Image (cartoon, rainbow, N blue to C red; front, side):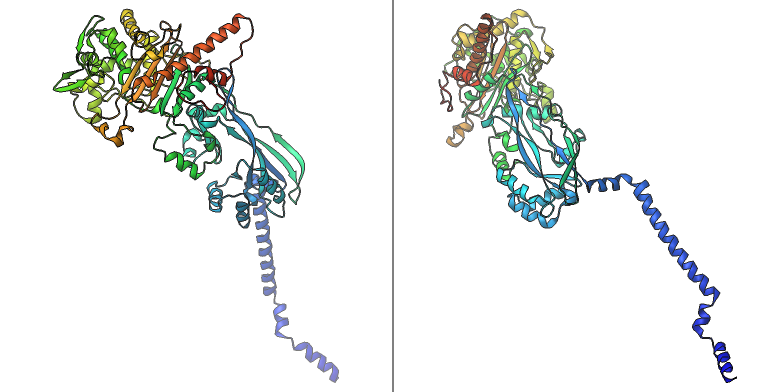
Length: 640
């Protein structure tokens, strides 16, 4: 009985914990918490699945794809730039570049990579930041053999897996700045260019044309990059080729330039500052274009070094400026044929009109000197052009007035861009009463007109502008748009309805400049009727240039414009020799280019007559022959 009693007593003594466990309310709350947790986990998994499979499938699939597929760009070569005979001016040279895959870049690797490749560490990190989200960043071009060997031995998954070698194409330009201003150069696209609407299809790191033909025809020359996709294992080793999208090379650009004439013009401008342009006035095709000083475009093919840029940008003679289309200088006496046609067409003078030149003349209280101190005596139009008499054209200018001068000068293209297919051409200045009021809010004074009559004062031109203006007169008062691409249809910009006799009087005077003992007599060529006009243009006033320090810097500019043959010009050439002192120093430059043209034409005709196929002569052969009479030493490899 005692035992039973004790057992019964234990059953009656229930612990508080047991009571709590047996509480139905407490049990249901635990089940609810478990259910809530289960639902939350399920919702989290479903939302993750939604983002992965529905909301952002491309993002995650691409990330997964990158883990097993290595994508390498195949860079497209730019098109070649050729001369009119198909000879290569600008080519491409195969090289290797190093890129970093952004997803695999580790900050601790960058100092060692920079040191091994002789890169500035700060510049490298800045470039990586600047390239934003670009997946692959080219950090060095034109790798050396030693650099390639180092990269190949360190680009494994255990060392620097972010490194990747790719084949690239380096632009190869002629040495010594040959034709540099005409063809231009390429470089990496800048931040400001990327913000421009015209570069909407370009990306950071792209190489684009920066100047010259490279810039003007960038869309033609640039190709379309391809891409190669390779399957890699978890160690980053290539296992299998997946797909290859071949690069599409850029199209070749066949220019109107003639390498032979270009070579002669380049040689003629050695150790000089200025420009030479040759073109066909009947079609507008540019045959040669030289600007000196020049620069080496090869330095710009990637990202130019700071030292090279400082050297070029700090040069006071501005080697990057294309003087052929950007120099704005007084044309001097090359402006006189325009004055002559304006005077004849306006009726203020005729062939027989005479003025007396005692060595100068006074107008509106100011004395204007003639270039011939003792004067030309009594002189008429033909001899005034031939001998370049200033006093004659002072009188013509005084009779015409500035606005009639501007009317005829603008018809010839002065004060307007020629429209050549090169970037950054400047317009020049042709003063008039409206021009002065617009620019200075001042009236034009009659005394200002006198100096304009001899191409001084406010009138300025580029070499191409004055070339087009005078050769257009020689081509029958027809002015064609200059262009750089062979085969383009001629574009007639303007045409003057001049009296043929008046036009012939001006052309006859320009013939006399070269062939009748005129100021350009050094431009004669046997059997060729060369016409031309010299010009000696003041850079500073006579009083200013008396100082010894300024005398050379402000010496007169020498000009000569020539075209041939007389009645139907095929070629016209201008030479600007900055600080050349006297115009006769520019005449041989034009003569030698004209000679090269007609010598080449004669050889072609001889070849054709003998029924043999014509082969364009050697560049050096032409330059050697054409420069036989030049008064400067030729480079190595040339013989007079």
